[in-house]
Length: 261
Image (cartoon, rainbow, N blue to C red; front, side, top):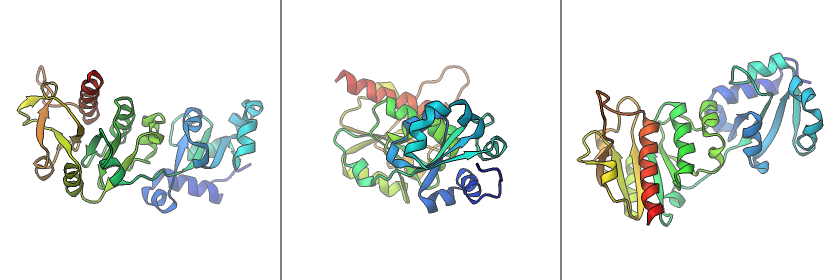
């Protein structure tokens, strides 16, 4: 049983939780909780860590996990230091990163992609990933400066959709948009200057939805590459919605129209 914070495996776990650079170097990230564990593809799991109390409380039902994976039992106080949550569930795992190609996402038949420029909030990204799966989105494109999708808060917010929603980071979001347009993807930008409301448009064929930074929206240079600006009607004195909410509304409008057709 691991009972010290100076243990090398524990040190590495903490680094993976806190530093995107380490996650990038190791091509791995950390997941927590029993639901996320069972959502994770078996061949992606590198190693498993169980808190001492979780192990003793569930010893009889943990037989398969003990047999299938490299498992370490960790003293409860140490496990709490490693966990990114206030009340740890007692199980976490180091998982291999999935890998997707931009060309695959941009060339799909009947593609619906969500394009995120400088999205910074982990909760927003996690919600968008989860909603994208529910709304039939085929891929997520992120600018390099967006929040790390393997941030522990993002991972928790996806509720497992991280494993089923293809995504890529791109060095140059503008070049990526131009490439998507060459592949006949119609780009719609969520923008306050939209001349039409989002539900007045007809979404046909391949669709891209462009969402900007939470505080500043889309940069002018990126927004101008879109084929159309759309906006969400607002009552009261509200000027705009949270980025994840706005993205969700647009994704489901596209999904609704495609379902009807």
